[in-house]
Image: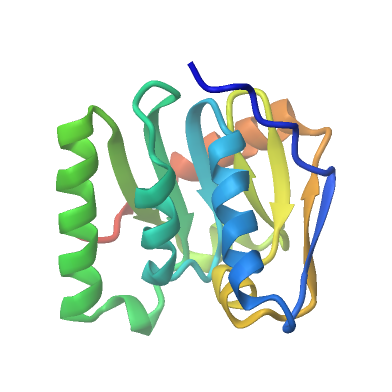
Length: 163
């Protein structure tokens, strides 16, 4: 098999001068996850589907759950079609892909965004900040168990964005 990749830095800097690297780092953070990917981003956008499809490896993960608020930008035919296409493709690979939304009241006590795997968690900026290169960081969190519990608690209040 392939040689194991060096672990990612605990802190990765996102900035406007590195638009290509910013997206590459996001993919590496997704690849760092094992078992599953739980992505909590109040302002998640379908532009991140590319990073998901490029990193979704059924040998490493069996499910991807995205949790966000329901934003007006999500109500487009393009977003719905992209979600259905990605969901179908990942399902064909053996990976469940679900995008759920929660009422803003359910997330009132949470500010940050996280990408959580079975053994890792990172505090991340919102998708648009990464893709637009706003100064921000992808930081390793030592709170994986706590964040997993929080995510699953919020998931309990959620419903699928697209029925």
